[in-house]
Image (cartoon, rainbow, N blue to C red; front, top):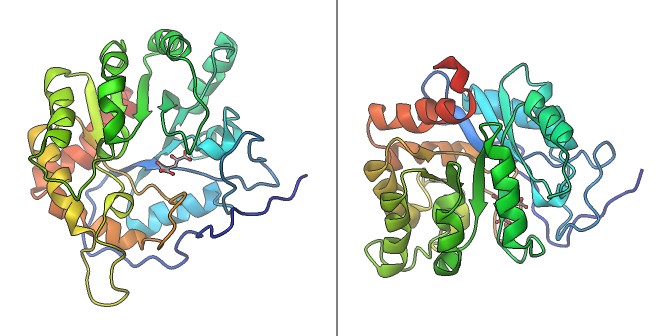
Length: 305
Ligand code: 0GY
């Protein structure tokens, strides 16, 4: 098995997250997290843009229990390319407590899609960040969306706010539910009432099949890392953006930790603190129930409804 050297400066996940003060509702879903390897068992993809630390399913499930979540949605990370084995294995062995989002190419066979479905996969991810992936032609992505629609899956898209105008017509033509990662990555140094975020809100307003994850305050914040001791609610500059979306679109929002937090350069968040931000962005028990339980169940465990 090949040995992998981590990308220089790579920050490992927090080994001792605090216990959240916010008590998650029963059945809460961490709807955006990843597994990395372990590299000796599930080697990273040759075309990867970074080499992470190991972050396997046992560690993910331990974090789930520590924070008080019931379930996970494991999103294929780009360091594994289109080799979905680590993610699918974690879903398959979770005792029904994890569902997945895969990455596939046009050459994926119907048989392979069926096996992913049986493992628990319910969506595919299209990534538009050049620092993470090479370009895939739009017609290939459209073809994949048409095929996975027949399985009842959805499409997860990851892009940055400045690219939304160019991607708009592609996204709005997709035939499935479309879930936008991390609030469409707004520049939170700009106004929540400004034109950039207005375009994102318009996407949600005009297209009822578009959902979003109000996740990654640690990635979006420009306020810098939180003080190590003292402040219990860091990343406050992201709160107005997340709260605006939760309040206007309460039935189309998801929340996730983004553990093990790939590509953070300055600091690694305490996952307990991230959970403690939830009541800031979803201020009522009703909104929390939809964000953390009802919405992810509709998308990932619909057979329970
Ligand atoms: C995230 C964000 C990032 C990375 C990936 O699959 C990935 O490699 O999604 C990022 O670097 O912004 O959602 O984990």
